[in-house]
Image (cartoon, rainbow, N blue to C red; front, side, top):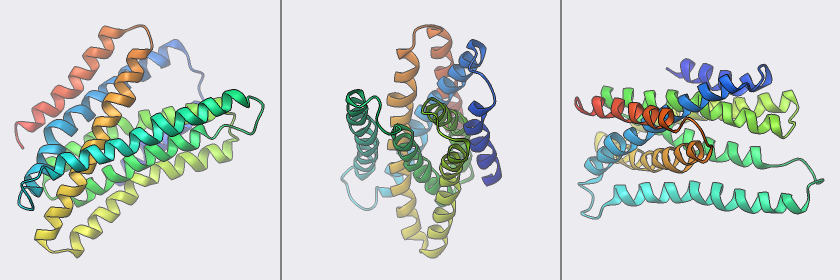
Amino acid sequence: MVVVIIVVGLSGGLLPLRFALSEKNRLFFSVGNSFAGGVFLGAGLLHMLPDGLELLGGISEYPLAFLLAGLSLAVLLFLEKVVFIQHELHDLDKVESSPSIYPYLLALVLSIHSFIAGVALGIETTLLATVVIFIAIIAHKGAASFALGISMRKADFIKSLHFKVITLFTIMTPAGIILGSVLSNIFSNTISKELEGIFDSLAAGTFLYVAVLDIIEEEFSIPGNEWLKFVSIIVGFLLMALLAVWS
């Protein structure tokens, strides 16, 4: 499982160094990214958030799962839509300044999401939920890594730095899996389930953010192939809905 995640992450991130961005490659990436958006939307709404609600239900009548999901979504929203925009506006005033830090900020946002998703995967106790999270991670890992690779290529990163950033982003998910597994083994069953509920809820927020505000918004902001993108999103969502039948 960890090996697959690492291979997918590295492959997606290093691909921009080897191949030109033809229209055919762009369409393939767009369809795959849209499918990943549907997978993340379904995983967040139909699996992660309901699991968080169930596991945290015994702590308080307050909807803690929704609160945690909202907080994790807000953190990513702040980093990407506030910090990123401020930096881009700053760069417009200093076009000839030092190299853009945008790829670093993008790597930070994606790494936070990847780490939380990894912890949720590592701490998960049920087989079906593990499969759902793993599918969601794999469906998006390559696309996210590819997008990060493209941003570094546009910023003229040297190959060695490009490789280091992609490698760091790639290992964030396995690092989260390891931490989740450790936490699950250290704490008692009761606390372990509460921790599972917390990270399921946090992951749900990041899943929904990535699905709606990252993937879907970005894909439909680019004209063309709207029907193909929409169908890809629905197929990804229905896959998660189908898996929810057995949950």
